[in-house]
Image 1 (cartoon, rainbow, N blue to C red):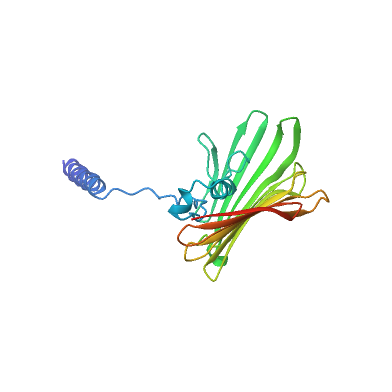
Image 2 (cartoon, rainbow, N blue to C red):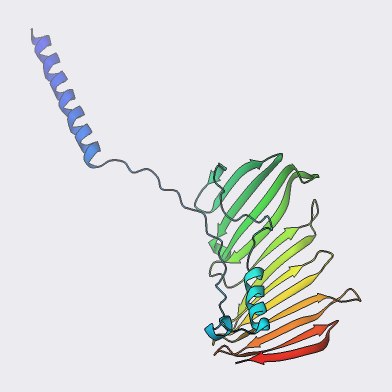
Length: 246
């Protein structure tokens, strides 16, 4: 009889502990570990004065178009974030890796954030084949790096199965002057350089391949802080036209 009483007392105590524990869990649930999202790749906005943007001058319009086209990565194959449906290979507070397949081509995106050197990196690798090209396993298609404050950085796209840069974007800031450059190293070589000063004035220069095979001035457009500007056009580096807008 005594044993039965002791058993009942112990059962009641265990039951009470279980109820209290459940109640405590409900009141103070354990929160799941939150994952740190990868850094977003973003360029500094390059804007021109309103007067220039609204100008009817063809070269003012051309300069604005060149700026927009130069800072765009559309159609280049560059990838800076996890696509929908991609498989997560790893995620941490400083490194993220994703993979996905497009037809016969497997892509792998590796992102790192290195606060110790004020740098973020995005690298895209190919394995497989696409557009009649068979890639070496884990061949690097794209390499991008950027300072934490976006003041400087680069994006490189490489020629198939080589380490030769075919497309290149670089940007830097010095004394609050922002310089952005895009190079096309293909057979039709060209370069666009954009400079924006703290007061909003700036210039766009375009260089094209000359008859000698070297890059020479093709276009130069300057604008002031209020949005008025001047322009010059060239043929094989020789000035053939000029104009202005107010």
